[in-house]
Amino acid sequence: MSLPHDPADKIAEYAHPERLVSVPWLQEHLGQPGLVVLESDEDVLLYETGHIPGAQKLDWHLDLNDPLTRDYVDGERFAEVMQARGVTRESTVVIYGDKSNWWAAYALWVLTLFGHPDVRLLDGGRAAWLAAGGEMTTEVPQVESTGYPVVTRDDTGVRAFREDVLEHLGKPLVDVRSPGEFSGELLHMPDYPQEGAMRGGHIPGAASVPWARAAAEDGTFRPRAELEAIYQQEQGLRPDDEVVAYCRIGERSSHTWFVLTHLLGFDSVRNYDGSWTEWGNSVRVPVER
Amino acid sequence: MTSQTTDLPAAMAELVEDFTAVGEADRLQLLLELSKELPDLPSRYADRTAEMERVHECQSPLFLAVEVERESEGEPAVRLFFDAPPEAPTTRGFAGILHESLDGLSPAQVLAVPDDAPYRFGLAAAVSPLRMRGMVAMLSRIKRHVAADHPGPPR
Image 1: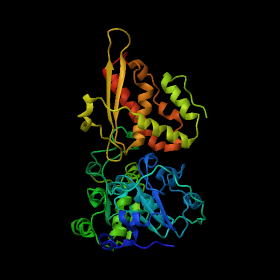
Image 2 (image 1 turned 90 degrees about the vertical axis):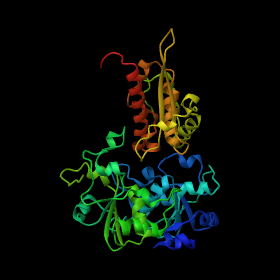
Image 3 (image 1 turned 60 degrees about the horizontal axis):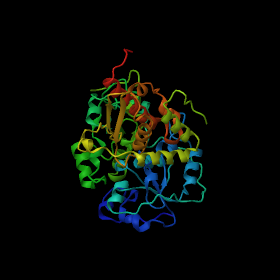
């Protein structure tokens, strides 16, 4: 059973208003049958400090990544993760998180790999809920395990691998990292040389559009007209273009993937989750500075 | 689960034993408690948090100051001062572990802490190995500050 869409004017203007809900909508529908709220943060302890009542934690490292191979979990593990949170295939799942929903968007993108039908983001994430004076609790809800089917992950539609990007060269690429990473000046985060890359720069032909440009000061998405001005008028991207977005490990680019796909209605956007930590370490792939 | 503690300073060894005596969920709660117990910055640093060493945009900002107190008698003592925002409880928890473990030790004792000490707390599975790098980086930053202040014998 799906919950109704958020009829707010700002949301109704987006290409897929069924993918986003506002804080007032969530306040109104919290606790209704069929709704499961998940918090997905960069900080693994933030949920424990307090969360939206009834929300459960979904951690991108521990729950969505395979512990051994650099890949996402398989259908069986995904079903376990969903079942433990009381999610069924029919549930309306609303995800929110810290950092303007980076990790929430990343989690939503992973749910998309498994074709979960109704998954939405909370516009503005955790910060917007708090700013609106929304209630928080440290109580972890007890949920009954549900039957979530084992669904085979489908990487073909929204995920790009290195080989796909090599074939894609010449078509639109969006690099959502900071200007210093794009220019190649920053090879890694200070003090994190082991998360860095052997080469700095960007994938040839990529446009630099830092992910945060899509977010307003308060972490909510900019209205559709402002997003069109950035991605369509300024960058010249068209909704029927094939686009690949990337960052360092694929989380910031999930945010941009969400913007292009669900807010602007682009037909074919893929997230290259290998991103610069793969490309910048790969032998003989072309790099531009 | 057992972790090696014989090469650690006493306070750190004790914390390692606390963490490894409990299951993963309780380990997160311990880390959360340490994040809450992290002492506030003394007033002399209050207006300097703008200088927080902001690690590049993927990571939470962390303020770290290291002082070496030299009394007329006895060993000098390392004093550690940390600050991180409340929305970064893991960073605060890592800082709490290092504060509890190292504050008040001599420079030589701090420099002798093994670089892999952060992995002794059994946290890698609870927070993910990738996130443990935050604590490794913090320890190496502390040791770098101490070494700069206290060159010691050439290495």
